[in-house]
Amino acid sequence: MTGTWLRVALVLIGLAATSVASNAETVVLRGGTLYASADAAALPDAVIVISDGVISAVGKSGEVAVPSDARVIDCSGKTVVAGFWNSHVHFTERVWRNAGAAPAAVLTQHMQEMLTRWGFTTVWDLGSDPNNTLPLRKRIAAGEVAGPTILLAG
Image (cartoon, rainbow, N blue to C red):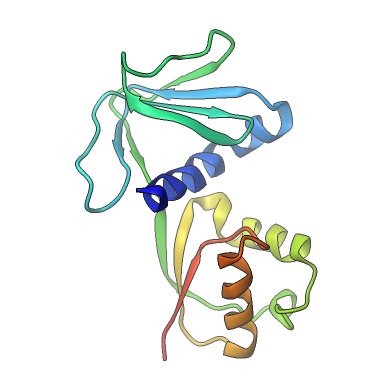
C-alpha cells in the first residue's frame, strides 16, 4: 500500500511541482477518478491533499478534510493516475557517467528534467552501461537521488 501512495505522490508532485515548490502551499485535487495502482479499484470523486509538495491525505470526497487555505483544482470528469511507465529509456548522456559518485543534486535535477516532471514512476533502460545504471538505481532506491524505479533489459 505504501508503494502505491508513493507512486501517487510522484505523479501529483510532478503535476503540481511549479506551484507547490515555489509557493509552499496546499493544493487539493478534487472530484477526479483516482487510479492509485494498476490492480487497485478506481476511487471515484477522489480528494488528494498535497501540502508543501507531500501528499498528506487521499480519500473519497466528504471523507477527507479540505484545508481552508488550499488551492483547489477541480478534476471532475478527469482521471488521476499513480504514474506513468516509460518502456524505452537510455541513461547514456554525460551526466549519468560515474552515477555512483556523481553529486546527488545534479543527478536528481537531470532526472526531473528527463523523467519525473512528466510523471514517470518506472522506466525500462534498454541498453545503457550497467556500470552507470546499476549505481544510479541503487542511489534512487536508497532515497539519495529522487527518481523513478529503473528496470534493466539484458
